[in-house]
Each structure stands twice: as structure tokens, then as C-alpha cells.
Length: 204
Image (cartoon, rainbow, N blue to C red; front, side):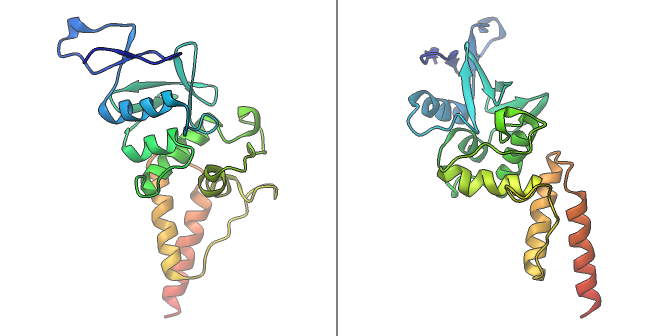
């Protein structure tokens, strides 16, 4: 497929069949990435605050440059599998819940954490989130922030866990999925949930 050049973006093309056909000026992407980068180029329903934006022909999240290889995305040396759900979260202003999974959300949360994209001024030392009245902030960004850092405007995070066994198990599964993709700030909550499940089992 010939290269497609979007305004202000690198050329986008399908992967070449032979190595000698490589063109260093082109960005070779997979079908999922192509679909969402076309949405990005339309600039009508995309999110450049908590997602991808372009500058000088390169793609960024926060102030961190990213690499796209096929459908996958590499951020700060970590490659994330470019599922439709992860791209949905990275590109769209109002991500479709029917497209992204809990694991996609966990990986998106890790990318936001690693790039400080939720923090005021993209400053890793900031304790203030970027504010927004949009759908994405209310439904996705704010809950991720509170999972990682505590209630907005309430200072440092206090671990509060549910009392229902079913809710505890659901929360445990979500935390384990997040931990599996490299989130290291979950130990206290994981321990608290496991302790509570053991306590409730002992009371049966």
C-alpha cells in the first residue's frame, strides 16, 4: 500500500514485504494503528490531552516521545500490545466501553503513570491532576488517578477496600492485571484485600 501522508504527521504505510523496500521517512503501522491514526488525523473526536499528539513529525504522550511498530506502542522502553481497546483509550475523547477491556484500561493507566500525562504540567512531582469537565476525565481519567494517588483534592492516597467478598475479588483481579503490566504501586492494597478475604473466610 502506498504511503499516506497526513498533515503535520509522518508518512503512514503498510509494512514492506522486503527489507530493501524500507523507507526511513515513512512510519510503518498495522491495521489497528492505521484505523486510529486516521481518526487522529481527522482531529474531530480525538483526545490530545491524555492521549497521543504530534509535534515536529513525531508522536508524543505527555512530553514523552513514543514509537509505533506495527500496532504496538513503545513508551519509555516498554512495549505495549496495540489492541483495539488500548488504541481506543489513547486516541478517542469518548472511548467506547464495548471496545476496551479491563486489561486495556490497566495498560493505559500504566502509560499515564509512566508519562505523567495526568499530572498538572506533565510534572512527575505534581500532586495535582490536569482538570477537565469532559467525559473521558470523569469516566476514565479521574478513577485511574484515584486508584493510583487517592481522591482528587484529598492529598495522599488512603487505602479503602470494599467489604463485599464479590467486590473484593473483582478489585483483586483488576489490581493483579495492573500489576502484571508493571504497576508497582499496588502492594498495600493487594495485601489489605488478601487479609480481608482471609479474615472473612475465617469467620465463615
